[in-house]
Length: 293
Length: 297
Image (cartoon, rainbow over all chains, first blue to last red; front, side, top):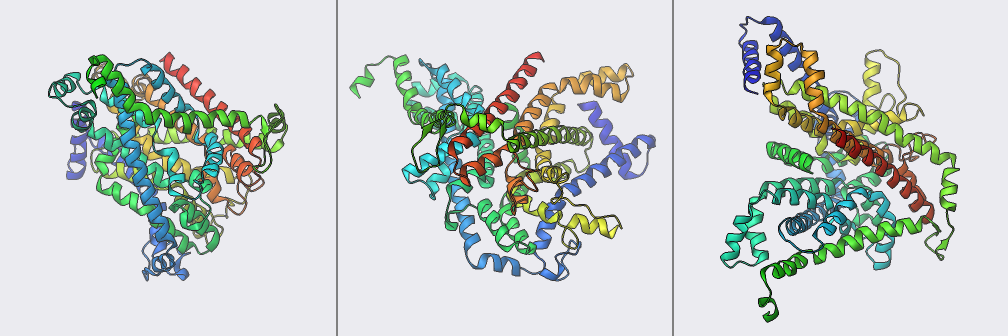
């Protein structure tokens, strides 16, 4: 990549210092940059409009201005006042965190066992778990619903969470990453007298920390935005997660778009803020999970 | 404990392996395999949740395949795929190809494209739903009006509604595909490009003869990943067409919404299960085609 990199850098440098021998090339590079940047701005416009409108009074909602003439947080106080959004936020947060912790723990546990232990049935278990990737969630929601109904799991945290406490995708991902942990390390720990659980937890897990983090990001985001299953398994408004709550809230207030945008902002901003803070890290994790998974 | 101490090392490994796997295996059997079998069995039964389950053979399937609404839904589901996958792939490739050559504010631009991927589909469905409203409410039509163009019916027209619902799904997934494409582009050895430059090959030839063929694994992965996503579209449709889910006149209704309606509004559990089996089959066929393509490369 070196030579091209240098060429590109040279041309951008030239572009912004104003002197250039290769002006046609610089012009091309400039146009490329402007189009890409413009496209990027367009990409975030829905998010910008959402936030801007959530800060507007009703009379200003239909104007196209991005900066409210009279910014207000009244929509937020109104939406949060009756406590429903607050409750949904807590539900989503608790469910997403618990599910993430569980899925990362168990996926790593299973991935490690399938990677590092020799035992009869290993291949069968691996193929069986992998094959569940072929089964779409939508095929399982009806049996899950029937199950939840007979076990009394409807309208409970556990009912919302149980399908996701382990994931085949994560198991596969973790198995791939444990392949990179040398067996010598594990053998050394064995000689030191650690038991197999300690070897996994104290020796192997710290070595795959980036993969654990990547998996955690995916699982958290998936659960934070999950819609169809929480929609089916919850009945009472107190048990809704943010997406389900927002959906019913939107129907309820119908044309009060500034309130809907406020609700949408409340359910979107947490993940956006997390992204802006850990941007590089998250993008690396997504690439890692996407390519290895 | 005494028993454990007398085991050989390989035997101990077997004990540990099953200690690690006991709970997860139970989970996969009870929460994945049993429900899958249950869905298949249910698809041959008639049941409204209250009475007894009654075996009806292939009746659910016969009913489904003779239902014009099902074929409408089937067509819609594939429309989401046929429009969504190529559009998002071409757009994300163009963006990734050019972004890869840009250094100035590279990270910032990449973040702008990636940001929508971090949003919740439900929240953004409501934002886009607002954008699509007629004047004086919706942003798009207000914008058109301010430029003096005619109004466009987005969600209320049977021809425009499906692409309008699809747009936020494409938009939200674009950043992910750009990131994956850029990782693929980085993985191409630079020596190929240098050799091509020495030979004086044109940029276009480099693109079609080197870059795209070497990106084939990435392209196959993204085609399958996004195809499965579009075939399973639900959140956007449900939230953008709530007054009449899947409307107008079923013109946006995908298979998953039909399943949801049949099961949780009509309580026709057997019939809905048959629809899920059809969805499963479609996804399986698409995945198998992918494996085939991967093998060829």
